[in-house]
Length: 352
Image 1 (cartoon, helix red, strand yellow):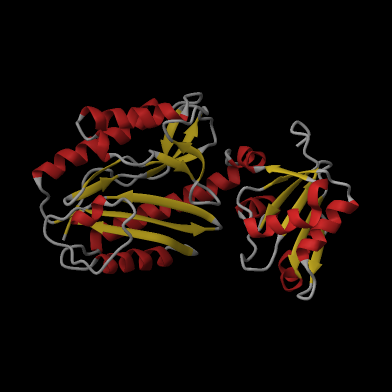
Image 2 (cartoon, rainbow, N blue to C red):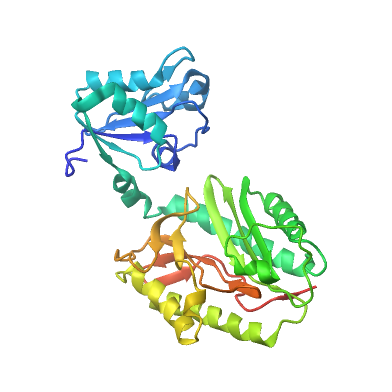
């Protein structure tokens, strides 16, 4: 903040706030924010009814509760004026409606800038506690996949039914939420973000299954593409290409290697096989308190990977009208290179 000439950082009820205060507050229409001055003094503005959730922080943070008849935006404006803050960096995830109202209250006396980089740079590197949570989550995901492959059903059931099987396993494993479970069978798998439907899975259908959930507030996210019954020989070839792309990305990933080079390594395998135009998304995304966060493993990201960063490796090929395939693991960058937090097989799995 000092280097940027920023007097204060304003963070809304976002994952950045959760990172700063160590707990996740409810996200509603009510206004929550934390103002951190350049001296390090934090002010937490919360609805009065949320006071019991944060009262234990009072020794570290100045808590400013507001009652229902009070305008919390005006409260923040009064705080800014009282502290004579002239330059405010704003968390990029904060609701624009709140920010616009605050700007209207303060007029031209205060300048605002994007403060996303101030928090993103810290959150890029997972500490030991965070890595423990993520490692535990990955282990539980591995167990979910093994249970599903051993005792679950694909053939003759609907995509929705598969989602329900995964959901039950997820909650039985201790996860707090299931944030999505995309199940794309046969031609539906050619849409990377196909959610799920009542389509009945047929013999020979590949099924792209991508799901995510949280435990202790942190996300885990993986994808595999099992097949219902005997797979088509052409699909086996395509699956092997995606598997090779996944391996190539891990092989090149080392500390100091730009994120774009990792994306390129996977993409080149798919391009050389003639399916370059069928790999239609970035290779990966960071993961932590958000399901998608920095670092993004994409062709224009020149930032070097560093130990402590966590990201997904998820190449895919999607052929309209036929099928799709994606293999996703969560990777941690170490001093020695890429290490997968997920250890279930990336080989093709055939299910009933």
